[in-house]
Amino acid sequence: MSLRFSSHVLNLHSSKNQSLFNRFSSDFITKIQVSSIPYALPSSSVNSSELFKFSREKLNPITASTTPSVETVDSSSFRAKNPKEVNVLVVGSTGYIGKFVVKELINRGFNVIAVAREKSGIRGKNSKEDTLNELKGANVCISDVTNLDSLEKSLESLGVPIDVVVSCLASRSGGVKDSWKIDYEATRNSLVAGRNFGASHFVLLSAICVQKPLLEFQRAKLKFEAELMREAEENSGFSYSIVRPTAFFKSLGGQVELVKDGKPYVMFGDGKLCACKPISEPDLASFIADCVLGEDKINQVLPIGGPGKALTPLEQGEILFGLLGREPKFLKVPIGIMDFAIGVLDSLVKIFPSLEDAAEFGKIGRYYAAESMLILDPETGEYSAEKTPSYGKDTLEEFFERVLREGMAGQELGEQTIF
Ligand SMILES: NC(=O)c1ccc[n+]([C@@H]2O[C@H](COP(=O)([O-])OP(=O)(O)OC[C@H]3O[C@@H](n4cnc5c(N)ncnc54)[C@H](OP(=O)(O)O)[C@@H]3O)[C@@H](O)[C@H]2O)c1
Image 1 (cartoon, rainbow, N blue to C red):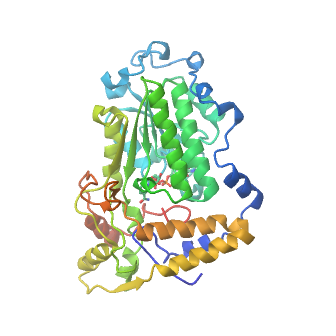
Image 2: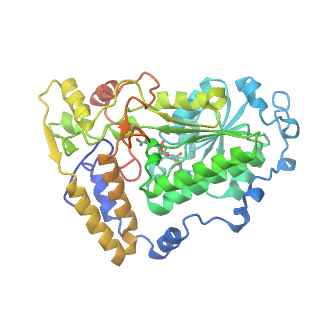
Image 3: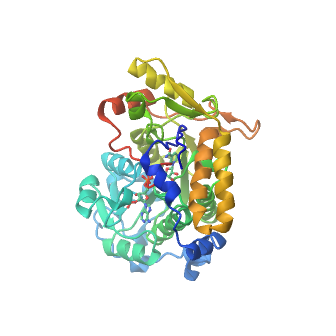
């Protein structure tokens, strides 16, 4: 595909993106199975009353001096404890936000159990040693969140109860099958396993965009959110905090180095089709950590943005040119081009179902090119910057300055370049 475009969260300048449209060889059968039974789960875990049966007798707590045994834990009492006596299980601990959440929780004195894969990071580039190093201060538990049995076995071998689960899990590709596998099933495995090991609170990193669900990963997240809320409704000793942030810095930084090199800043329409209140990793991690003990965050859906006013792509470009001390140079791409590309892909999917993910990636790009990452006001049906809460202190301008100075290291996007 020769078209290269970019919105505030989509950067198709990158050569990585071209592979996105070239990944047309996925397994047809698997995709049919997944798209026709998107909620497919092991039959043993379908009945929710079975799901949340605690398996406390399996536990053999080893921190008895500071942590009461599971048998005697009052499920709502962890909020009264000192953080060092609170066991927090973090899944998705190796992700862009998860890493910062682990650090923040450790800094606040919690006893952190970080679940990670043998090879973590984008395309599994980090070895176990890298991961242990990155998550220093946490008890790293190498396990498989996509498999409930192995997750429970790993937790059992730790021999400690869990008080709180924090999930920063997300599909690394955003593809249809993987979204259901991670944003729904693996996240649900973490809830089930966490509950079975005593967890009475679950903090979920979700996304503000689920309020207008047009994409598969949003539907997967929403389905889990609904189950989480139901679990709290049915069990008075259990609570949740659902964090729905606006755009991350990494999603907005893709053009910084290109513009530095003299390229125009690319945006859709007039550059004002959408806006967001970008939030940094440390600020979001701090907000998520607040949700662990915060009584005001119990059973809440919490949309959250960074500090300052909402910024359109046009304003983001202006900030960037301002930092470079150059006259703004914009390339405005009609949004209709994306609609055309999506239309073509949708037609092709009917003939070549293996193009399903490519079509989905096109839709994701279209979504972020035109939809604001702000609260959608139900009264007006419009996005509202005023109603979108702000948190933290890091600004996009400071982030752009840093990328201009140091590059995008640590800000890499996922396995395709949309998230
Ligand atoms: N990008 C944005 O602007 C934005 C804005 C608002 C909300 N969000 C939401 O924020 C959430 C987190 O985003 P992020 O950027 O921190 O995610 P990320 O960097 O892609 O991290 C994903 C995490 O999930 C784990 N994971 C993925 N697939 C797995 C698998 N098959 N088995 C085991 N673990 C797996 C990863 O482990 P490995 O390291 O082992 O791969 C990693 O720890 C997402 O739900 C996203 O929708 C994003």
